Amino acid sequence: MSDNNVSTHWADIYADKIIREKGEKEVYTCASGITPSGTVHIGNFREIISVDLVVKALREKGKNVRFIYSWDDYDVFRKVPKNMPEPELLATYLRKPITLVPDTIGRADNYARGNELDVEQMLPIVGVEPEYIYQAARYRNSEYAQGMRTALEKRDEIRAILDEFRTTPLEEDWWPISVFSNFTDKDTTTILDWDGEWNITYRDDETGQTETVDLRTTSCAKLPWRLDWPMRWVQEKVDFEPAGKDHHSEGGSFDTSRKVVQAFGGEAPVSFQYDFISIKGRGGKISSSSGEVVSLPDVLEVYTPEITRYMFAGTRPNTEFSISFDLDVLKIYEDYDTCERIYFGLQEVNDKRKAKEKRIYELSQVNGVPSEPCYQIPFRHLCNLLQLHEGDIDKAIATLSDITEGQRERLEVRCKCAWNWITTFAPEDFKYRLTNDQDALVEITDQERAAVHALTEVVKVMDELDNKEYTTRVYDSAKDNGLDTGDFFKLIYSLMIGKDKGPKLGPFLQTCGKEKVLSILQRY
RNA sequence: GGGCCGCUAGCUCAGCUGGUAGAGCAGCAGACUCUUAAUCUGCGGGUCAAAGGUUCGAUCCCUUUGCGGCUCACCA
Image 1 (cartoon, rainbow, N blue to C red):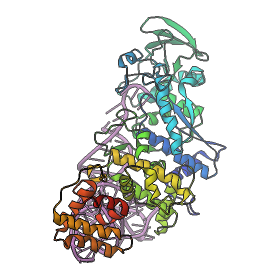
Image 2 (image 1 turned 180 degrees about the horizontal axis):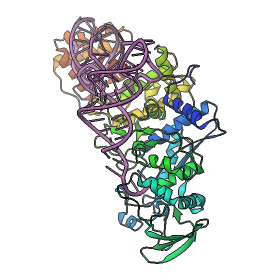
Image 3 (image 1 turned 90 degrees about the vertical axis):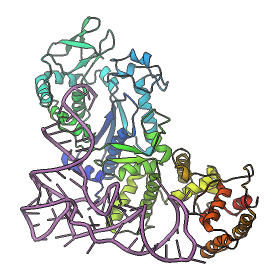
Image 4 (image 1 turned 135 degrees about the vertical axis):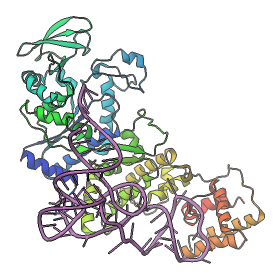
């Protein structure tokens, strides 16, 4: 907590609400989860990070917290994803559990695991480290046998709840569990009977074979989603779990689960609904790592881990927002730096704003709050610096004399993001490269040559001049030689970077440094 | 049809445990000369969608209406 006064950050508000509604407990369980039936995209990540923020808030209140992430990997493989290799091979696995589907990308033993690994390997980078629960393993080990039996016993009660919202009521022979055939591994089965205890008899619809299995030992039975969720709330004693707006609508799965959970003898967790997030400014540049959706690694290409957290921590969950890859990237970096300056007292704002920004800053950190702010350099300026050095991060940083050792690592990460952004997403206007000996000389008139020479003399002493005098003399270089200043600027840009326009010339030349500028201008 | 969310300066949005509103961008002006989605400074009074209600007092709470969006009712 930043101060003695009560935080109004949503993560703290929900932490308080959990404590208030669930009472004092030895341990609070916060949950999240998803079916790994496709690439886990940045929208799914919103749930994970939202839980993480609440988990951190609870822990800072001195609570023990168990943060679980359930992979619903005993789900059925319903359709072949678009961007996977060998679609015809994959098609033969339809209706089987996704853990039995091969990963044709070769990431892991099976398709589900491949999707899981993509996430599990990335989350620590943004400081998220939940305890993973693998549903397939739990079901196969019959750890949910009692849950399934309860569902069978409460079959009519559960059916009534689900029917409240259905357009067509469930069939008379509906059963609250489904079975993967032991003959074909597919879920194309029909349950024929339940003996009132542990035995289920089903028929394989493809082969016509029938079999009776014991829920306590079989690995083939599972609960459907709308029952699986509330069952797990009880089994794992879940106190908090948010969900997307699709679940939270009346008749949605959270809504029915909160009623069904009573059949399992528990109550619904504290929850909130988070909105979707959209992507802005990617143009035709689709994800390199994961097909057509934008996922966490794609965001981390352009945003540092702290700023990635910052975007989520600084936005209320029920607000839709977009993650930008266009010029808004600059603004996000500037906003984060402002937030950081406020945290470290380098920028004065009123108390209310200060408390808010400080809390957001704390929650944005991956490994605790650093002892000093990051090297404060406007992102735009950093982009210039990197372009002047053609993406050589070490050289670019070497020009910053006042950087501390503690700031270097974070700045390097930021430089990598900046360079990725420049090369992949920045508008063409924004990009440039200094010309060098290899580039052909631009043809210029004697008059222009005279102006360039005059500018050369100014550049030689630019580090000693004050700003005003420097600017004046830059303009004089043009004026004294009878050149229109607009034309003069165009000329210099074309010599320096081969374009009509560029960064504000005066500061640009200073950033380049005397040597670089002279090496170019003195060719003329 | 049900549910949820939004409607605040030209634009994008902050403001959220109620005390009659703010940032960025754009715009305008200035810094002799100033090109740029790329310097600095100054300039923001908008019926906070509408009407009622609660309150000493509401953009913020309640009700109704309008407009826009999302979502559920099949699966997860």
